[in-house]
Figure 1: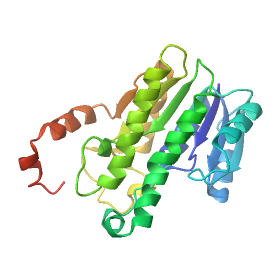
Figure 2: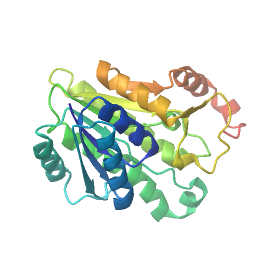
Figure 3: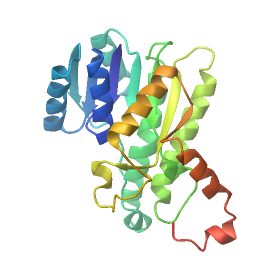
Figure 4: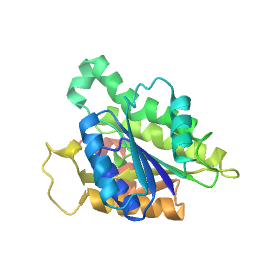
Length: 244
């Protein structure tokens, strides 16, 4: 298969790329960091990728969504799977006062990936899959990260709507909602306890969801579906007394 990964340098995307490389698939990698991207490309070739090409690009502000995807499709001879895996956590406290920072979070985590999905719907093979990373943070607004959560929640809604729109024609759409994951993005947190998953675990869940065309919403791991259901059902007067 031909796999394109946007945000190929992120912790979960690296592990997804390694799974596809071990299968002998062809990969096209995009990210903003040139040195990291070249090292990842070389690693995937060693791991068995049929080929691996790389493009350095600011994914949140590309020159053209459509032209970039057409270029990738031409170089890969078609795109079977597109994974949109980039994003930023941002600083909630700063974003409440610094609107430019709030906009950076919204542009990176919602606007640009949503536009990549819309553009990809015209380019990815009808039998293929577009997978995008949302988050459990998007299931209910919480004081600790509601700007990031709003972006990820909105992205899941776009994925659901696009999945409905393309149900009869394809490609298939999968929005993955990870819980707490050990990646560079969460490096400043106390990453302990049973709710934390490593990037390899999430990557296996994502690839399985793509293979089986599950979704359009997939929680990773599965138990977050029920955790977030409980959180959504807490009445507001009680919820507002928490510090989540």
